[in-house]
Image (tube, one colour):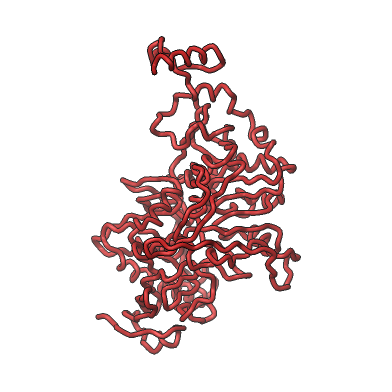
Length: 534
């Protein structure tokens, strides 16, 4: 066998292929170096414009990044400078913020469809969607990552519990609205709906069939890449990068550092050269969506700073209300739990943990062992949480890509997840991502987080009523569901309910100080049993 290899190598050596140095292997056994050969083929481009200029209109493009973390800003800017590249279907967790990130290509009208999990506060994106200018295929975050991972490995489809019992399964999501003028008061009219998903049962549990994504191009940001295309990502900037880079027919990498072949250790490479076709140097400055620090000057609580004494009193009351909820929620956690916390009130829970209780915080964008906000001098654009806030890593922390992160979630390895809500049903149904025609935030990773309620305890933290005084706890949810029969515990500013997910029904187990059962009954839109605990 080795003789045959030597003969093959000899033939290769006379061509343009290079070989490992003599100091690496005996001279008589010079094997062709694929990495060096790849580098000689010229993967490194002088400019980002050169690397993207031949992307055809109508292409499907994967754009990595989570918020603005790990976003291929240099390549996005280059595409923006190529107006002939248009009618793109872009796959990305979200579409940037305003005109940052993919927001540039929305503004330039080069995107006709987004496949995303989250719109968030991007009003520009939301407005284009609601006025029929761009299509949107809302996809749970973990499913989005898995669609690209599966496609990369030649798997056409897969079954997942995420989205079963929701509009993702039934196809009741609007992909595109009929076009209408901005600011129009005309009712929204769907032009295209999502397709219903096939359902199958395995071991007594229901799953839906999701088809994989097969993309034409991927644009990703790396920390380091060698001239052959081997890439390394930094902390949470990995997110979707590895899965996206492996999927596309043509993958373009922008890197902060381009190094010679051999400069990277084999065991540190996260995306292998076989997947990478073009390389450019990243020149755009890294953006940080939310700079959160532990040493920020404390805001004055004076009436003058708040506007009026009434404003100050209202803010103080809201703060105390949130802290009541969060303090009680912290008691749901046990020492050593692996915990995922949603944005808003759930993110405050670590500050109220009982003495002796230590938990490991998981963030779905790829962190296990997340720490508190950094000091101003320690901010790192590559270390952000799922709320896009700058955070730190504790000793023993690890970072990974979105595929691994959502494998932890769907696989039931997270002990507890805490989320907010728009509505909660008496059977444990949860709605927290959309008010049709009005608020389109997207489900992000929430559908995945509640997809394994037999293994991951789902705790909801919420005000008991909405801003209009309507109950958020109802007999049956009217808003699109995030998950069906998934909530175990509901903690509000008035009380604590447990939920019987199997048979349906609420049980009142605790009242907040000064609250009566009658007040809870008045403000709850569903019947419940009373079994108050001492």
